[in-house]
Length: 217
Length: 42
Image 1 (cartoon, rainbow over the protein chains, first blue to last red):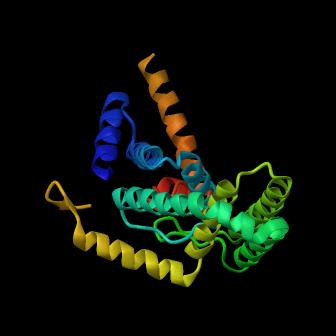
Image 2 (image 1 turned 30 degrees about the horizontal axis):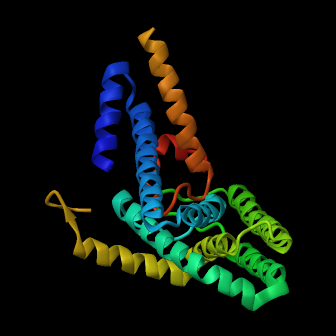
């Protein structure tokens, strides 16, 4: 991915006579697009093959929205990120599809309160931990960090209210609210020190285990 | 004409890149190294 984005950025810079800074920005943007596009293709493909497309998109979407403001643990290459994201979302979506109806029966009328409690707990965690910046893109401005923290807490609170109201009215299938809860909790784990250690361990294990075209991926 | 197309492509890519830099992390679990030109004031 990095090589493809670099080649595309170089080609564009040659075509339009861009400066080095402009080429760097274009390459960075292209790499983000390629990485996100590949991840989305994997998510849709895995979801379609496993028959849990709605759950997988709800879980990944919930985590991605909160992650925009909260940040969190990272993997060190686009390939590893895409495969791990798709695998984790598929596993979570399958569990949500299977366990959603059971959880709804078990919790009964308490479903909205449980979702509200989860959302409030995540909001409290975000108030303490978010934003967790990546070393590749440090957040040096205190005001910027403050804004992101407020948005992360606000997103968690909004999720709590919306999920509780929708699930309480019975408008949201159990598998979907459970998938969304998994997405929220996955992102919450990602901002904790344990989440960071897990991501580094996973990154190391994948780096040791896979090669692509003769190079580490 | 070619210059205008180049500027438009660069503007779109620049907006996308700036959005990423403004967020804590956009799109899943990978964050490429942000260009210095976008990190100056942060």
